[in-house]
Image (cartoon, rainbow, N blue to C red):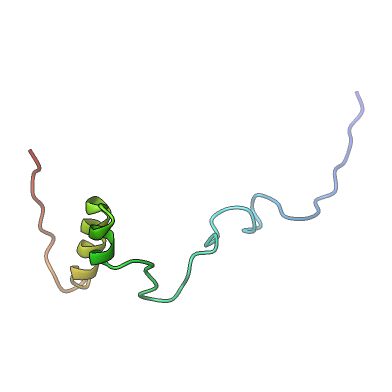
Length: 71
């Protein structure tokens, strides 16, 4: 049986260059592409609700977590 050595060149799975990067996402706070009103106008109520929830959320160390059960 013969062993072959491979060169470790380029981007490997552990180099951080292939996965887990920002994939072109903006790092600017408030860089949303559409407002809640625009999403609602386009019929995207679910997405509008998610954006509204994020915009209205308190800082993590200031508010209590409130949950509710959806029927």
